[in-house]
Image (cartoon, rainbow, N blue to C red):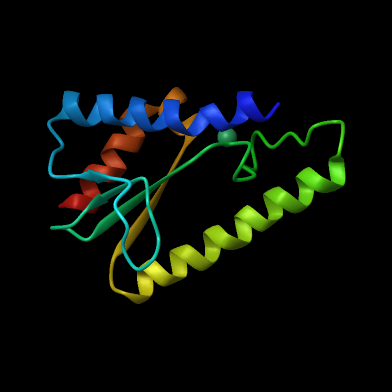
Length: 123
Ligand SMILES: [Zn+2]
């Protein structure tokens, strides 16, 4: 179970990198720490931060599926992640940076929209 789900984010991040290259989006850094947070991508010049959220780990409304065993554990774990996500976004905004969330399902199903949103944030 853990192995399946924890690989989701890395795949999504690498997919996003592929789109960055294809679209000529540059000057990003991956996994660089700012304000004690380590976002998946940052664009220091534009002060844009991107978090890549796996549908499972971040409790995506469309694809949340709590495993059938250890329900309580998973529910608490995912709720904890969601709470942390909210706090992190607040912090990023507080420092005047713009946070964007890219969902695993977004980059899989409608990457054009995701890229458009990112480009808009960068301009
Ligand atoms: Zn999803």
